[in-house]
Length: 393
Image 1 (cartoon, helix red, strand yellow):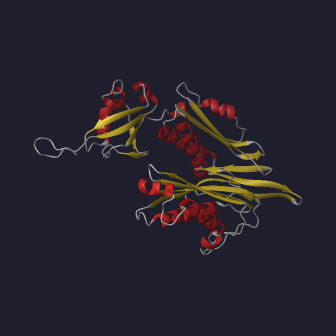
Image 2: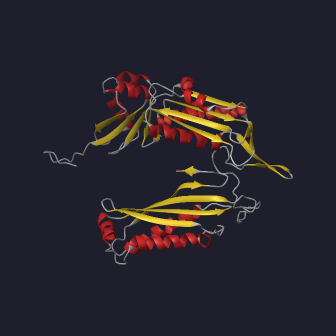
Image 3: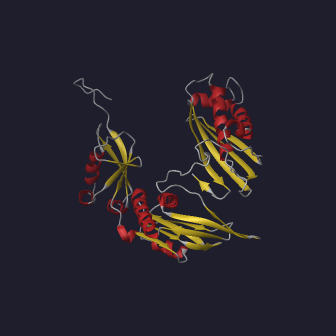
């Protein structure tokens, strides 16, 4: 704040970044504006400022533009802070920008990809889910409702991510080994939006559309069929597998699952002052080698996850690798842990436990220098193996 000659205190102006999409981006000739607004400004003030930019007044005044503040929809009265990002979301283009189909006919990647091609699309991302490991999948769908729900998801993704267009097609009936069961495509001016849109499309379709699948495998005694468990239509997990029929905690029976190679990678972030981080880099921490000790602690913890986490299965780990890096300029210590095994259940908890204990060890090693160290996050970033296949954050 500054003090003008009359002695009053004047608050400093704030700067916000405004992202533009579709017709707004084309009219402005840019996908981003930097605005300087007075202290206390709201989203409505930002809209007024955008409307004063060359070529944008008519569009902003005419269209029912929605605003997202730091990736969350907000109303016009929402106050802004310095450094905020405001995205202006024009109306979804409707049927011309979306393609949705739930069908018992074979799906074509080429057809779905070509349906989202647009002159303004610099990136097209396509995801194709195929039958694997089993002889076939049998899909059952409440087709009319599934199509409506998928159409709503596609429209919301187009709006949220500023896509040029999006499409989704899903099979029902028998889908043989190697055939496509679901295809989604998203096009956007830039690859980040296209990837984000395609990711949300497939994740939400799997969680929200009323479509069910059954695995079919051939054996000496005939065909074996098993319905695949999923989530409820609201995206909230259904039956908790760690509870029995009376709601009591139990260890999940994995005896019927197939042994497969399973991998998981987790990451943790530990924040400290740059001075403390530089001391860790130099090896001047009071207790010695911080990252080396944290690595050993993480490896040891991963091996004993089943003792630390109730109802976790004891696993013979094929590999557990823990690494750490230090950014002395920002005071950020990053820890990553990768675990691997060949078993009937995954190693996500082993990787996350390794990260958590390694992060706590970093804290313990530097608390003599700084008490305010913070463990910002411990999260799974990748897993593979098992029926659920590959997942990436």
